[in-house]
Image (cartoon, rainbow, N blue to C red; front, side):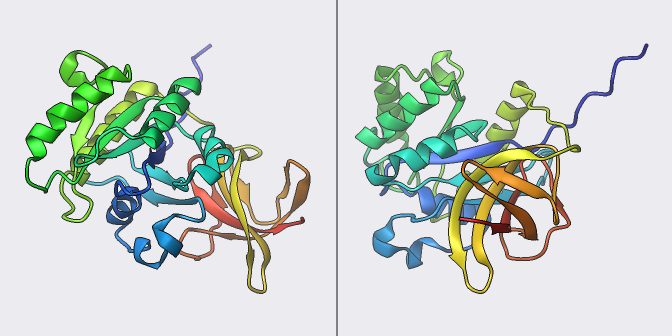
Length: 258
């Protein structure tokens, strides 16, 4: 008989990791085109949020980004993000180089065998090119071999504040995703990961979920760890109602019990 048709390629799920002051949230804002960093308590991301960037230009694939909290306190939470991800973008500020948090993210990536893309942030500052060479050497010391050195890890110089290199970063992510061939069934019962849960005003528990296989729809019964419930509301990252969430589509669900 004929071979079954190839499953579609969902957008890759990309987690941004890196030191808290290296511009991770600013980079996410630039990609999302909004501004959250200014309103964060002490500048540290409190909630893992997920959002999608659509395909554009010559790119057939968009990407779904997960923001991980940047503080050591959130190590367990970060680990949960790392297991739901296809690619890790390691954000390193060129004026600071590799830090402990950078090393921790590299260690995670190796543990969960997740490919890396390095976003070298603050390239608009003076001495950018020299800093890229220095950072490349520091990464080599951590056994992260960049493409420029014959390895597999791309390094993309970016500036989150000046919005430089964002298209190149998205292209690099799309290229990595195509090489990974991350195919997922877009129908059938949904399976995925709960990234965070918060109390929503008048909505009870709102859980941010990321579907990995199948489709999640309003009215579906869901189980997550010790918690269970029925999807009363399914919202996108902007708070608009979704009819369904397929692979790599982030959604917010109300209806889970404690």
